[in-house]
Image 1 (cartoon, rainbow, N blue to C red):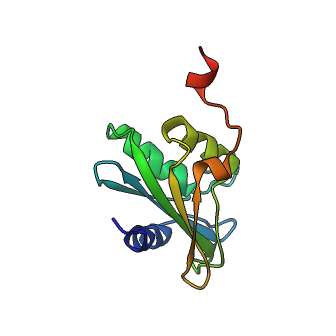
Image 2: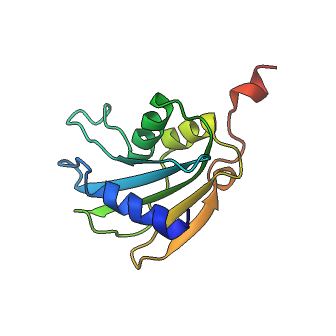
Image 3: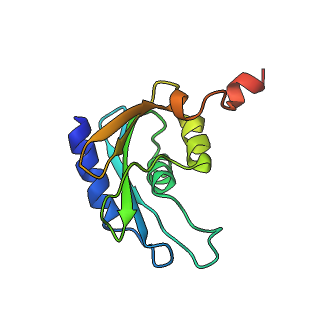
Length: 136
């Protein structure tokens, strides 16, 4: 799947976001190794703590369906559903990605001008905690 197609799916997911408090809608599209794609959106809560990010929504849906091998993710977001710049995953989402993804996992971060930046998980989360490395 091309980055552009994955980005289109992230944009589609962004439109489903529930963001009545911040107004910032975020969408994600997660590509599994077998070609399956899972979309996710942010889902806010008045208490903020129970809010779930778009990236984790997509990952949790995929894991529920039995997927554990992921290759790429596109993420986009902005105020009132208008893409306003790159939205890299938050720290919690980075750690959840680390649980399932290798260093070379690719993220496409969509900019306001419809361009995108390509980064790896290792670039976003250097020196990360990985259970298999720490449980030997």
